[in-house]
Image (tube, rainbow, N blue to C red; front, top):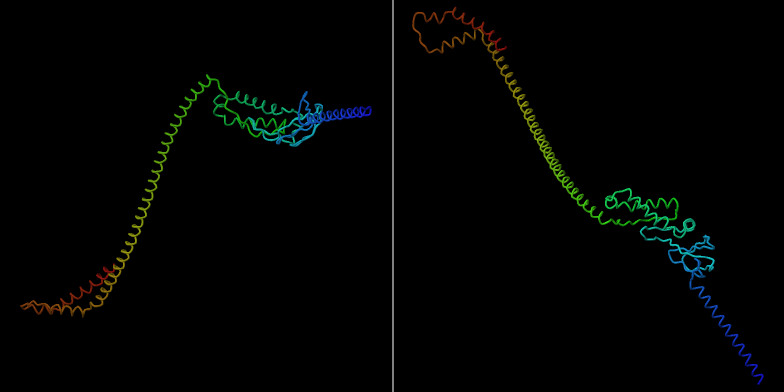
Amino acid sequence: MDNTQGRVGASGTTRAQRDTQATIFCVLVVAICFMLYIPLSADGHNLDIVHQVPEGHVGVYWRGGALLKTITSPGFHLKMPLITRYEPIQVTIQTDKVVNRLRKEYVYDTLLNYGVTYDKTWIYDKIHHEINQFCSSHTLQEVYTDMFDQIDEQMKEAIQADCTRYAPGIEIIGVRVTKPTIPATIARNYERMEEERTKVLIAIEKQKVLEKEVETQKKMAVTEAEKDAHVSKIVMAQKLTEKESIKMQQEIENEMYLARERSLADSYFYKVMKEAEANRLKLTPEYLELRFIEAIANNTKMFFGDKVPNMIFDQRLLGNFLTGTLRSMPKQSEKLTQ
């Protein structure tokens, strides 16, 4: 019996040890799981061992308050709990009112100088400051209407200039500024001013349209007058050419007529000269006597009386007639020559 009791006591002791070990093991497992998967924070220190860096971010770490140069990529990573603090920093485009991006290679320098809230310092506080500066240096009309389309670009240039100088890792991609909110009384006054301004602009545009129409009509009249003048000039030139052509034709006809008349005159002169020369050669005393006798013989008149034979055969009368005829021949030849 004693042996049996001893075996029972030993068996109970072994079972108790096993239960204790199992309990300790379960506690350790739960503690490890708790440390691995349940992140807690105390005084800004993460208590988790395994942490995940999301896509589009990088992991940065602080140990004892000092920023480490270790930069991790997206995925699961290990760190020392309670000692090392971790923060994910976005390096993709942030689509806020100011579209910006932090370059990955400048993450350490930017956080070292300006901390995790670097975007508040150099973007969001800066945009409000620049908008205030712009509004204070321009009128309501310029801010609300005339220059509103230029505000985005001016804000982007102003913020990017300071970031490039002091925080070169920050890239400003775009700025989206909404219309400012105007008090109701100022808005009503502005609307009335806009109505009056619109009326003035409409009147100005109408005046411009009228001036444009008058100018167009004037240009059309000038163009029409220039066209008529050009056509008249062409017609006058055509008529002048026709007159000159007629004149040249008349001159040619006159020259032809003069040449023809001159040729006829020369021919007639030559004929007369030749006839005169022929007559001068023919008018010999013998020829004249023959012609005189023929003339007497052709005379059909009858004469009666004692003096008739003396008249016909008076040699002195015949000699005087022939002499006078021969003397008059050279003078007639000279006149024809002249």
